[in-house]
Image (cartoon, one colour):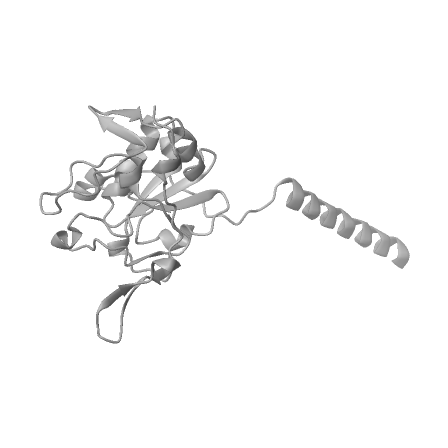
Length: 227
């Protein structure tokens, strides 16, 4: 009788273990936090396109996702006077996991605050005019698709949220899924635990920027073919 009962217990245990393993491999638990649908914030932040649900306040909860890429759209040194609006023209730091892709090299920038003045005005992959995007190089779309894979969730950040919003507008206009792109706002307002400091003071007390720390994507226009 004991052997019979022990056999039943063993059999049930094996069935439970088998069901567990089957579920583990057939329906793996990725451990990824579920993503809310992109939704613009209220007021001025919404005008910049900053997301209401995922932004500087909680982006730490969404880092290191294998199904996502993270892009900071600032230049290492922006010609615009962002100090005039409480920011920094230098890339003084970034959130760990983000890679820097300078928006002003991708498309011409307009609509900046008067106090900022003009940013970079050189060559760009695309030119935006009358809400339409002109492709300037044969390689432009290939570069864009490599930097912003369509099969990934895309988290965008910059200094204050404006460049990130412009990037999302460009991508959506060129065929990317708007529900897979999040403007998570500005590094200037980030107070999380994944800050990578680039700016430091040297022995003379002068600001020095260790750009070697920055995962940076440069665009070499000399290698591209104009259309």
